[in-house]
Image (cartoon, rainbow, N blue to C red; front, side, top):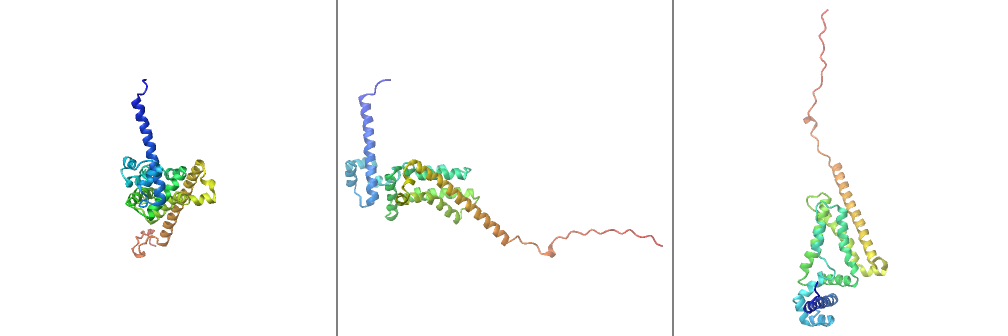
Length: 259
């Protein structure tokens, strides 16, 4: 095998430096957008924090809006579309589905401070929505929720989802979301719960158990409701005079001989 040429080595170094420069811009923007919001953060501030020039932002992200959009998807890796594909599979056992769901949701907690900034960014976008909000809502909120509703509806053998299926889906996803929303509180109350990747894996395992219990409880509630309904309103019976009578059997008497 021939040794790489000087030109090839130079191109490899440029690609490496380019990826590093792009990452510096991305994470500097994430911190600033999370702290100040889109409108109050300038590209000049971002370039200064990243140690790059403003032209690099245009080169790597197109414009400020493109960079803002990237901060919602790239820092933690993956996207909601991948999760939907994995869980919205007819015939997949509910426990396996919920394990995939919880693992995917909890995994980003291993990114430490980056996930805190991402959470602050999402909360700020909810409070101070930009043109990015419809995209974030459809992709990261509505998409996974609708998929979970379909999964739970199939498990409960429903033809159409009702309000209680939506309640159950929100409760299940809320188990995972509360770890992100309450991360600072958890650190203050019991910091060991999130301090290592192993403890975060334990969270995902426990959340599956909790979610299964919630699904089982909803299944039982529906069963009890159907039973109570059938007892309160038994099937109507036909009036007695319309009931089909069973012909009575008559005993034939033998004629007695005359005396």
